[in-house]
Length: 430
Image (cartoon, rainbow, N blue to C red; front, top):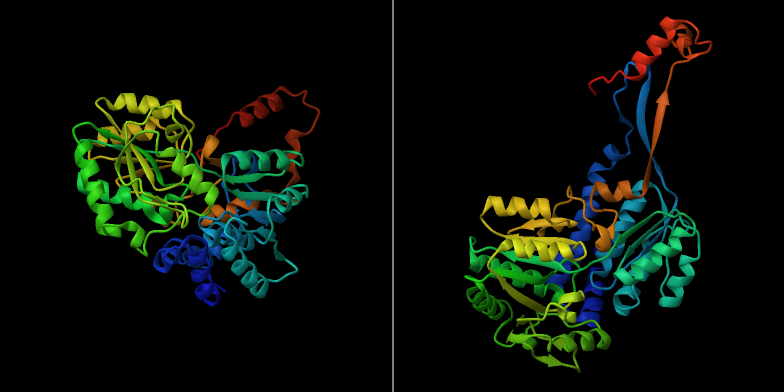
């Protein structure tokens, strides 16, 4: 199916966001294809009964977990990586044996239409349906009782989904977002850090939930970092990124206007160019933003990067910890002590050390948020587990009843009481 839809999907994403086919291929199609291949390779093992050790009381019994599908799933996709954010959870649902209804995002209409066309063509309509529509459609879907809801999108809509699900005690996976901080230590390769941060920020024109949202750089390196970032923007997108076919556009006018309004929340050090007709905003670096400005309080979700400087990293950790827990925290450093401090003191969905976005390419690393950045995890086996009920099973032989007699009344005999007490507190090495 992915191969069949490839050409039309490239054209659809180009129409929706003017995104280069190579970037769409690497961050969307191939990512989905890789996740599918990994699932197919390991599915038999995931489905197998998982036996566990037993204690002395149940020594002769079989104890294991049996994987069974949760049931009928609702997947509400998003627009920034339409196929990946819709089909990867669907792959997990199919692997788990669930039926599913999929709603692609109406914000990327061309991509949504292509996905519906090929989902309807390749997937069994008795088990899998694709529904297009806007807010009213989503609200109608949320009135139905599901066995699990998987949502990718904003925190505000995530709360609506969670509230609707709670009415039926439906479990949810919420893949949300937030402000992903980047800490740049003085003890790092500043040129490499600049290149990787700019790439992570500019992929999909910054419209990525795990994109670096703001940078705290040690004051000894701040000016160098900004200069190197400026150079790498030129290396990647040319002197005028607006003329580059490698730099995407903002999805619609509403998002463009929101992002444009943020440009006045600090001093523009690099970029700041906009074009309302094409929804273009250049890769932009802003210094000295007010901490109470929208640039620093709201998720940016665009190619604008605030940079602040610090002397004492403890003040940075205190600031990050005072905010909602991010989906990802990034740290660039060769200082093992600092990295360990960030790992232990900053609660985030993921910690990326010395790179941006690349944790998504590790299928054995579950991906998801914590607190306001989301709940539940997926990718690889984690997606299968998200849509699976792991039923605990104890299989006891019907014979050898004499062994079990001590658990039955009467309990008058002191030896029976002592033995039951000993067995109850016996803790074997599992």
